[in-house]
Image 1 (cartoon, rainbow, N blue to C red):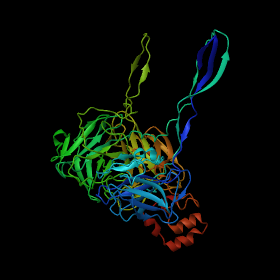
Image 2 (cartoon, rainbow, N blue to C red):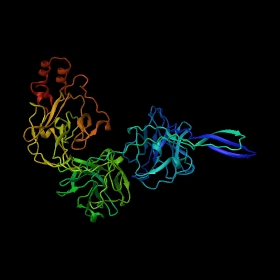
Image 3 (cartoon, rainbow, N blue to C red):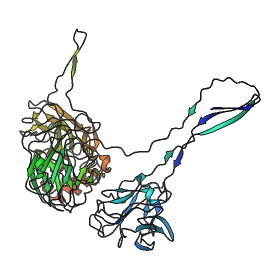
Length: 632
C-alpha cells in the first residue's frame, strides 16, 4: 500500500507497505466439562427433567464425586445427584442425569432426586468449584439468562455441538424441539478447534525524500489467509426405499384425528399396490393391518401418498382412508405386498414398530405430529433411528398425491441406459434401448444368531438369500431357482410372483431349505432354463450376523462387511459397530453351531468316535442346525 503526504517546500513523505490478513486465530473448545442440554419439563410434565453433560476437551475427565445441583431463582443451590466414584468421561462423550419422571429416547446414566424450577437453573459442581451453570433467571444464570421453558417438548442445547462456552447462557444456548438427550452410549463427538480471521492489519515503512515530484507505478497486493470452514456432520444420503414421511396419531379432534403420510425419496417410480400400512399396539407387541393400498397405485419420484382415519380432520384430502386407529404410544410400519417391512416409526420404546430410539408420545388434542427430516416438501433422511430422523411439527402439513413432486437433493431420475447409434448424417441420433429385467443376488446371510424370520427361535431358518431386479422391466419369478453349491441343498423354485424394477425380495432358509455352509459355499440364482444368472462363492465364515452384500445395491461390489437387512437396502456393518467374533473362530473356521462335544472333536484334537458315543447315535442330527454340512 502506498500513502503520499505533501508537507510543503517540496518535501514529500510516503508510506510504502503491504496489506496482510492477520493470521487465523483458533477458537478453542472449552477446557472443562459443560452442561450441553437441559430441560425443566418434558412430555411427562413438570417432573420430566434432565441435564446432559459433555466433555469438549481432548482428555478423559474423572467426574466421580461431582455434583449436579439445582439453582433457585434466588440463587440458592440444592444437590440433586452425585456422580459415582470412578466415572470417567471420554473426549466427546455425553452423560445423562434425569429424574424418575424422565421420558426420552435414550436411557439415563444417573438418576436425580428431583429437578429444578422453570425459572431456576442447574449447576455442575466439583467440591466448592462451580464448573458450569445455566439458568432461566438472573441469579441462576451464567451471564444473560435464558427464557423460561413453557413447552413440554422444548429444551435448551449448547451451540456448536456443545464445544464452546463464552460464559453467557443466552449466547451459548439455543432452544430445540423436540429435545434430544444423549447418554454415555451415544457415539462420541470430539470437538475440534474453529478458526476465525480478524480484520487485516497494515505493516508500514516510513520513507522521506526531498524530490519535489514522484512518479510511481503501483499495484497493491492483498494477501489473505483463508479461514477453514467448520467440520460439518455429513448429510445422510437419500433412502433407496419408500419412507413414512409424517405421522399424527392424535389431533385437535381427538384420538382418531390421525394420518400417515408416505413419500418416495428414490429416483424411480414404485408400484405400491397391495402394500400395507400396519400398526403395533401401544407400548406392546400386538400387530394388525391398518390399510391395504389398492392395486396399480404407482408412486412417482418425489410424490406423497396420504392415508387418514375416516374421523380425521384431513380425511377430505386423503388419498385413502381407514377406520382402525393407531394408539398414541404405538407404532406404524409400511410393508410390501410380500410382508417385508420397509419403514417403521414408533412412539414408545417397547412398541414393536420403531427404528432405533422412539419418539415421545403426543397425548394432547393439538395439531402436532412428527415429520421426517429435512422436512417440508421432502423427507430424505433415514438413519434407522426415529429420534434422529424426525422432528416435532406444529401445525402438521399432510401432503397427498396431488402435491407437487419434489425430489431429494442429489437424487436423479432412474432412466434406462442408452446406446448411441451414429449415422452418416451430420447430426448423430440416439436410440434408447430399454434394459429388460435383470435379476441378481443382492445379499445373503450364511450364519445367523438372531431370529430374523421371527418364528420364535434362532436356527438355520434365519439365514436368507436376497435377490434384486436391477433392470427396467418387471420380472415374474416363476421357474427361477435359488441353490447353493452343486451337490448341496436341493434347488428352491421361486414363487409365482412379480418383482418390480429396483425391488428386493428375500427368501429365508426356513422357506427354501437351503443350508449355507459356514465352511464356505456357493450361492446361485438359476434362470428358468437352468442357466446360471448370478453366482457368488464365499470362503469360511468366522463371524455371525454379518452378511455378504453388494454396495451399493444391485450393481455394487461384493463385500463381507454388511449388517443383515433382509428385504431392505444394504448397509455397511460399520454403521452399528463390528459384529462379535464367533466363539469358535479363533480355534477352527467351522460352524460355531456345532454341538460342544463335536466342536471339540473337530477342532480340539480329541478322537471323534468316543465323543460321538457319548452324544448318542443320531441325537445330534435331530436339531435344526447345520452340523451335517461338515460331514459330507
